[in-house]
Image (tube, rainbow, N blue to C red; front, side, top):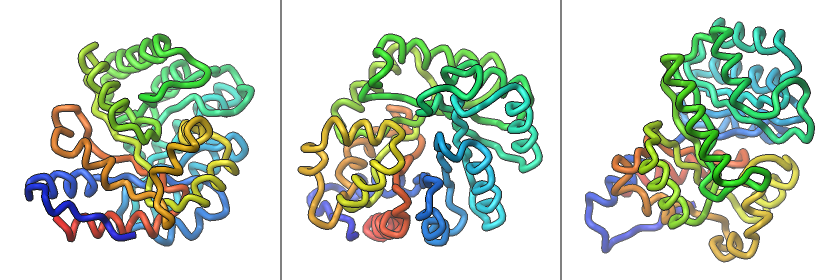
Length: 290
């Protein structure tokens, strides 16, 4: 999809957008379409691999191993509610050490019932750190649009508790935000957590270049994650934001580009729904347009 031009904006704005888009992380989902998605990744891309309730952490790690062999920079998603016991934590930590993984993303996950002792991400993260996985940074989830099962106050308490855990362990981290189309809401959330003392950098969750049918079909099939919850709650809004060809994230990214540093946005996290080729073409077009 062609990136939309903003001819009236100053060159520095174009450059700010390009700089932010250059720091794009691709998210892949372990399902059949992941094979084509892997083949379409730009060389050496930072790639997050999600953890589904059905396939679990082992499948995520298998894909990450392949991505390492292909020269990419994989970031495994580790869903606490899929972890059966302490042995599974040790095995995961061992795999991370052996493969010299430097970053992981820890989330509760959307399994209806936990497979073991972990209801949420915090205790699993603590046990994983104790198992010495050798990682340097751990990502955690942020919810500008809220969470259907957790109230906003509890979400903020959990966010700051995880920041404290990372500090006590001497580890760096980041916050990856749920997909949200509402720039005003995202900005207000970012300003709020910064004012409350949050210092972790943010990877801003944005949709990739995804056509309408794919977003709804794939979102429904995977049945997990904040992105599907947003689509379910705001279907009419999503439809208005999409052209017949699909969603173009340029305008959403541009809302944050000029003050990304002030807001602590270090990168973009692209929910591609495995539609990597179109998103990669968009990323390249933004670079050329700058």
